[in-house]
Length: 420
Image (cartoon, rainbow, N blue to C red):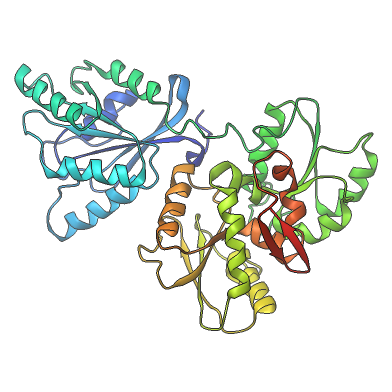
């Protein structure tokens, strides 16, 4: 459980005004003194993350945030940090102090959660200090806003188990796939994972999507073959029967497509991540925007993790080079890294996103909604690279045959006509 990446955990964010007991609540929920607690308003200055196992939900991460009613210039910055957490949350816990009443601050939390399409549970805290009337008023206010609520005392522990039960009953993100291979295989089938030794991976380790794919394949009981692209031909020749699927790193698409016979299904880790974390169909449609790129058009390349770019970095070097080769000089590239993402995308002609292995599904879906609100196309690394190599149709075929993509909607790949 401790080794489950944060990006794979449900993100449960705690919001509310200063001194309503958010930090005390996260301590009570986790059974540890995770967050600093004080009667001084504004004690929490940055989001605090705590991972734990929560019943049927499995590994989760609770996120304590600064009060969204903070004041002053530093307070404004703390508010921005807190609101940025909303975009990655699968569930919001809105904590209220019944002795302090409720006002437009709680209204804003609910409004933003609605914009993000994030479910909310109300937490009426400090019931050991509040009168019965004050607690009932707070519960009624939440009920009037259509919010399920639980009364708790973070100090005495009353209601904490009830709150955990309520969180489990909400079952955030019921559409979430259970793994990168969910629904693609039956036990006993063979999958070949082509894992080039990535220059950006520390010595002795694979990159995260490769590791997740290996674990998912083992969990499903698949016969799992892991090779570099240089050993793929021998590996395929040694198998008694064709594999159900070959999965490759996108950067090796060209050589792997040539090595893998056409009748064997082929896709990439990045395309699988798009299906697992976001909306593959939207990314496939977004590739159409490449044909319309002109000199001066702005293209945003978004990397969800921070790393030191290498001389052959996929996002900083290779993709700009490939797009320049295929669509001409003069494209204006810019980059954003980690949690930073522009609020205004109106000047961009296209967004190209990484595979998003380091961020949550909720964060990916929120970015897709934000980008969509500006009517800007988006594509990810895997779909883009398959398109440039002229094999997008083949890379999408495993999902077309399952009815997850519509074959009737054409997408032009360089060198051939693809359909989705």
